[in-house]
Image (cartoon, one colour):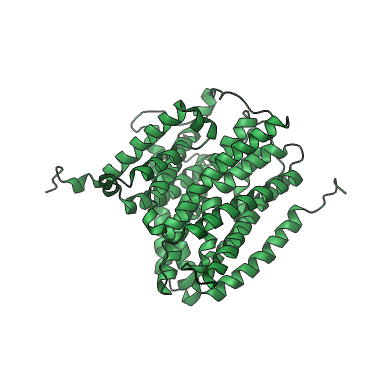
Length: 459
């Protein structure tokens, strides 16, 4: 018989208690301390940093379970993407298809550039005797471009490859540290550059945050199920998200059991579990399509999907992901890795800044800075960071920058997926990593030819 007085029955809840208390305290600090408020740092990141500052205290370090925080990060990433995929997309303003494709190309090419920069730092350090996994530079685009979830996923995978080659590499801590640094870079560098432009008179930054106004149409659409009847509407949304995530698990588990030969076992299978967010997106879209078909054939009379609630679920998941991912960092495991970590983060930030700035100047002549801040925020943190920066200069999303950021996900995925396969190929050996670097150079040149081509209008 289960004893609820046993602390093991509360172990997981204790971790969530820590998360929510840290989030509430961090949000209170951010709202009342002007320095933090002006920095635009997410409250979730401040919460994670708060726990990191308290970790040196012996009793608190023992209270925070690193493994539990990593699990929360992993699943929050997948659940958040499922919630976003289930939404019925509503685009407020028009944007051209070519701009969406070009924005996707910028995203994918920046990932490649970040990965190349990372390898150009870690491979020479390894060759000159530094105790470092040579392929660890590829975690830069996972941390900066993808966020804590992917940084953790591939950090764990890289650590296993390193262990198989007799190297000690704490990939999860290295990747999560890059992700946390990315949030700081995206927010602080973005704010500093924004103020520089404001002083030069090139853009206007809103002085005070505006209160968001919602109408009934923002909360629900016509024909939706009631808020509370035999089952609460939010319970339905949570059930749909968890149903899709259950299908994600079955898909990944099924692939793991397949006989895919040497290439599949060594390259594809390690990636399957790391792509939980991708399978969640694809299966979420499929389930949404299936529900839509049932509605069209009148087999389902009411609309079960509520965008507003799914937004809140996704937002909660991403807040938990950022906070838990930051809290999972163990500084003791970063001993000997500080030099490569600082070099990768610093050089990656500089290269990302100037590359994205150049791309936006070329692609968005009418809204260059709106495009830059949205893309730079996303490519160093998450899409939420991009939106936060964008709202400072375009609070009503009057330019196409917001739509470009939302819609570019599909072309970016199409452009970037073949390259992501290299994430399973490169860490197998130093030779594979060098081959990967060559492939990335070629692909980056092709992207640049497309992005910086002369259009008919320019000709």
